[in-house]
Image (cartoon, rainbow over all chains, first blue to last red; front, side, top):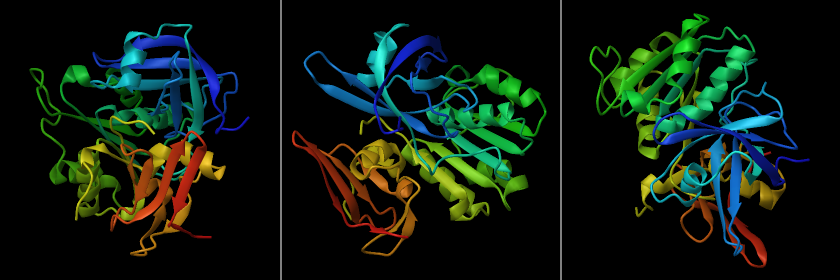
Length: 245
Length: 86
């Protein structure tokens, strides 16, 4: 079985993460160990033969066998994400192809430090990396900066708090761009050079940076990291948007 | 320079499955060179325009077209200008 062949995944569990984001667990008859950061293509076929296809990052750790989690944001007018959010129930089947991608990937055997910059649901592939880091008991220093609109839009908030509380070298930073709860001590603006420099500073020399988010976010973050001293070759980016392939 | 709507631009990583369908293996980490400006990089770093009929991969530095893939009822067709680096 190859990663290039479509297989039928069965929905085992659906968990709401935020108002607009859900995680779907799919069991796969031909599960293959993935690398943290990779994605699957998901394809729906209507009764009349019409097909729609999207790429979704894997959220689960490679250590989890026989099933994968895909965390999917509902996109306005997005035909695939809307269907997954509103129609799909446990036991339904969809076509999946993967794991795909050899560029935006991280393995715990790589030397750190690790710097992860995520905009919105760009945190999904980072979550696979951090779950992998925890499962592999890696002590590689890691910093995650997540930009969300409000506190209720932060995906994996409780799990990120829990991972950071292990005090194993992971630090998590949040910025809330639209509204902040009373007593908020994190950042409260869109990412900018000053914020990126603060988060990146202790690790700039030999760190590997991953940036994932909408195009404008990725451009700002990559440019800011370069100005903070990162070599362009140490910054890996992944853009997402409302599209199919 | 005229560009497509940048908010809709993805990168080569997102179309890795389609590219693998054409070439038979996952090429997202494969190095290559722009035929126009010579910029070198992984296929995953190219800009992917997926809203046209078909997928167009362009150079992130000069916008030159490096790879076009179109699906027709007869199958997948592609046009490659990107120079593979071995």
